[in-house]
Length: 503
Image 1: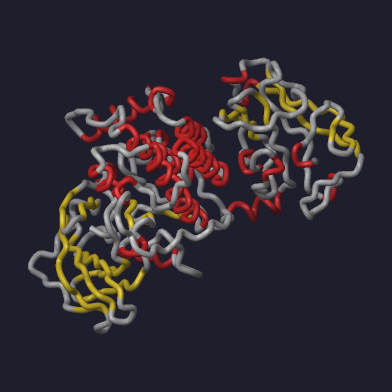
Image 2: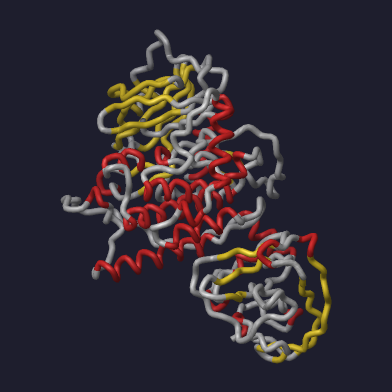
C-alpha cells in the first residue's frame, strides 16, 4: 500500500497485511470498518482528471488502486474508504496532507492531489511511492549497517522536524510509515500515514493528560505513551530512536513477547522497555544512537526539542564513517542501491532551520538564557528555569540554547564533545552541574538585540539553584533557591566563568 495508517493494537486498531507488486504494507483502519463489499469503485475521480488503472490491494479499511493524473502526468495511489465506516480516518489524513503542502510542497511528504466523495466512497489520491523501510530491512537480511541507519536517521529527523513545525505530532512512528520515492527520488525518504496524527499546538501547547489508551505501534511507542500520557514531540523522537535500534539489531528486547490478551501483551512490552537499560539496548553500536535516545527520554512534555543538535549527532557519525571508509558518503549510498545505475537523481534540498510553534511565544515572554555546559567527555546540559527567548542555534554557545527550554530542572547527559567553561560553576554539587549565570542578548542586560553579545560592565542579581542531594537523582523538591550579587565585566563574571556567548 502506498499511503496507509499504521498497524497497531491499542485504541481498537488491528494490523492487516497485504502485498502487491513489490510493495508490502500494513494498515490500521478500525476493524469494525467495513470493506467495500459489492460496491464498485468509480472509473475516474475529480471529473475525469484521475483515471483508475488497477487494484493494488485491499484491507479492512477498503481498497487501494493505482491511477494516473492526466493534468500533472503523474502516477498516483488512491485509497477508497466506504462511507458506512463508523470511523472515517481518510478525511483526517487528507486534511493533514493538505496542511503539510502549504505554502509549498516540502520534500519527504507525498503530494496531495485530491480528496472527495465519489459514489459510496471517500477517495484520497496522493503521490505514488516505492518500498518502505520495513521492506528494505527485510531485503537486507533483517538489519541495516551503521552507515545506512545513519543516512536514514538524518532524513527521518528532517521529516519529523518539519511535521512538528506545523504543530502536528505523528503518534505512529514505525518502519512501514517511511517510504522511498521512485525514479529520480528513489533515495528520498517520505513520512506517510497521518491517520493517527494530532495537533499538539493550537495557540498554545496542549495540556498533558493521563489514563489514555496506547496510540501507535507498541513495539516502537515511547514509554510515556505506554503509561497513558498524551503524546507530544518527545514521543515521536523516542519512537524514532526505538526504530533506529530495530534497524541495527534486527529485533528489540520486547519483540515477540507472548500473552493471552492484547492488554497483557502491552503491559509486558511496557515492563520490558522500562527495565532495559539504554546501555544494553545500544551496546555494540555507535554512541550517537544511545545519546539520541537518552536525550529523547529526558525531554519534558512541552519541551522544544533541539533538532539541530540531534541532526549534528548523526552528521558527526556520518563524518566518522567517511573517515573510516576513506571516501565521502552520498545521500543515495543506501546498501540496496549500491552498484545500481540510478541515472540523474533529484538532490535533497539544503536544510533550512525551521521554527517551532512555541518559538514566537518564548521570544515574547523571556530574554535568552545561558546554557551552561560542565562535566567530562559526556557533557551535562542543565535545563534552567528560564526559557530562552528563541533557540539561537548558534555554534558560539557551544550548543544550542534550545536545550535549556524547560519549566523543570533536569540534567541531560549527551554523548558530545563540548567546550568546557573556564572554571567550575558555583553553587553546585561537586561542580558537576552548571547553573544559570546571567541572561544575554537582551538590551536590559547590557547586550544588544543583534546577537553580537557585547555587554557593558554591569552588576546584577543572578539566581542559582543549589542542592545537597546526589545531582544524578536530584529533584525539584530537594533544591533551594539562592540569590547572590554578581559583578559582570565584559565577557567574564566574578566567578571566573566565561560565557560562551560573550566571546
